[in-house]
Length: 421
Image 1 (cartoon, rainbow, N blue to C red):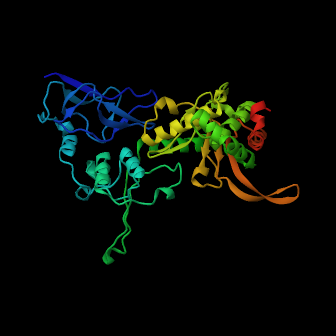
Image 2: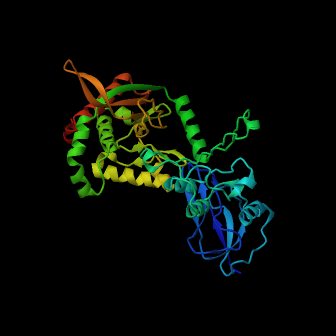
Image 3: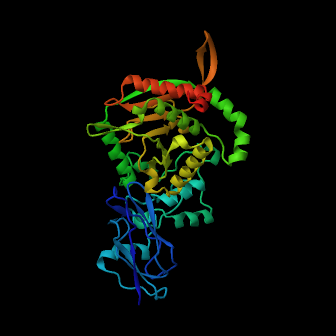
């Protein structure tokens, strides 16, 4: 018998530990080389653990939900074993073995996680428009797995809202659905369900509190007439799409306008390090993206050197990776300035929170036709409200306001971006 150990991938220096999600194989099952055995969640990304060699899974060292560190052994594979030959597992792995060998339906599990969809399952349910609660879970504590969704899809599970009713770009969610009481005797009850935070959600909460407790956050607002940008997109959309294979979105204009302003007012692109101000000579723009696991902020490296097509392609790539849970740690590390587009979901106005250690963030909102005054006349224009939150410790109101005005001017006269004026 030749035993090969399955180990946790090397985590980044900023990630101390990770959480095991759910084993995709049972003890005694045959495994192909590079087949995904389990997903491991860190506070930044979800990592897939492939089989280092073909064989038979003989032991699960760490159960579902366990906490692990880099290079820790989590399972063992017999490269000469035969499927069905189950080795005796140690007591530490008994919970995992029991869970995977005899999965219980959600109704029987009765745990707090019953009916909760795993990240991959939540995405698949959204893709097939399956109604929440329509898929019984066979995972640990009744959680819904990807296999459960595939089986339910084949069996014709009821769908939720029509695809057209789902906002474009809206993130899917794996939040549990708490059913209201249906019996007359239960009308006085108020159902609740307690679900542990994912590592990503806990990390987001920690960083938001850190931002508010360590930064002197102030927000300045302005409005921008989006007609020039909309006219330009309409004029060149077809040619641009044929040439580059991607459509022109609004975000590339916002990125270009932000870089334009950061070049004029470098302190907006700076960060605080103890008693020092670090001025960055590069422009790494973070783009807030919704994902099934929560908010993530992948980075556009050297955005000042990217074309409109480069930006659109990269944003599309990051969006897909976020939905699939494939974003790498290196793709979300760093950043000198961020942009959050609440307008995708219909937001009219908000005050975005700075993403530490950055010192400023731009909030973009929904573009709506509104009555404005031009040359003494009331006219209808497609208006967007911009909000920029900044750290008042190093950024004065003058730089913040003028920086936002520079973005406004660039969007209302895109030719400024071409001539850098």
